[in-house]
Length: 223
Ligand code: C5J
Image 1 (cartoon, rainbow, N blue to C red):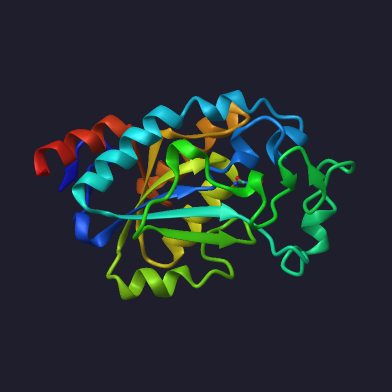
Image 2 (cartoon, rainbow, N blue to C red):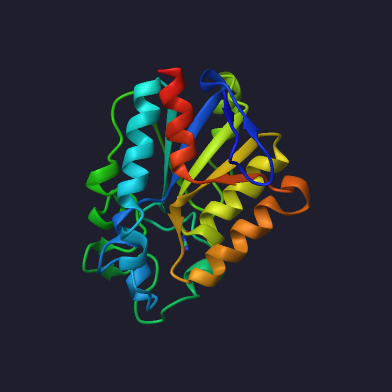
């Protein structure tokens, strides 16, 4: 399969060797009252990518591809949240503190769940990650290797933090990664634009980007 419109050049993949990875599409980042808003951000920017992400997820499921959902989530005792992480951000509402949707970025809390529109279904992987990158302290690389995954299609939030970190980690581990441009967002539009440029610069130094319509078109020919 080939996405001709990918940047900086066509992206080739096989569904059986590829996973769609949705990074941190959690209530904490996307809905009012969560971690994202406590940092002073306008969360409606992120909500805008939900329809395109839903369409990509539905098409990928229909094609029978593997889906991986990640959540930025810490243990309730915060033993996996180093002080350098907890002590930054909004001093009056830190990771682990009680917020409007439960404890901020803590596993099992209402705000830590993936939004209903993109809720995982049986057979999909759900990875709780204590860092920004999806491979740090998760064991995910081994799981993907066992399944023969070599290519990763990315969506999720935020573009320049957890998505970019995960793509860079993936690149260093030998995966060919492509970021779906309209299925990712930042609280800072300029950061998103810069991240897309950085990923595909210098002959795809981190990976590729493409509009989700190009993926849908490729899949419609295959299914
Ligand atoms: C952040 C994330 N921005 N998922 N997390 O803290 O990008």
